[in-house]
Image 1 (cartoon, rainbow, N blue to C red):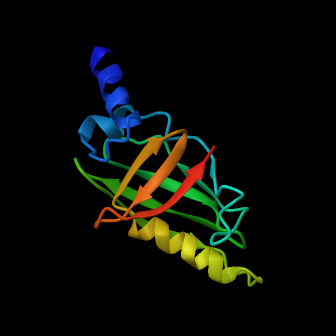
Image 2 (cartoon, rainbow, N blue to C red; image 1 turned 60 degrees about the horizontal axis):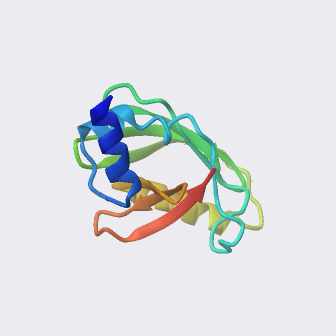
Length: 134
């Protein structure tokens, strides 16, 4: 329990470093529906993201990209995470380019953390790709 509190404190303070315990203990990321903030005009405002409760270092994710539903698998290591899309709907709509950008950001993600109640997606170069909120 003490280890969980210390780890949560470090992660909530903005620490981008991810370790094994992070993926096993962070229930505040898994099983929540995350949304694109209303003020973000570059991504579809109706887009959502949900990460399954992880089993060891892999699991599933799913959501709505603004036009289509999507789903896939993720794989985590001690210090990173990678995503692979397994299914994306094929509806065509006016903001399909925003959906493609949203999904591209998920696929480029190598690290994730929570700061100020927002889920931050980070690339391998430590660039912030996007942030979602509950």
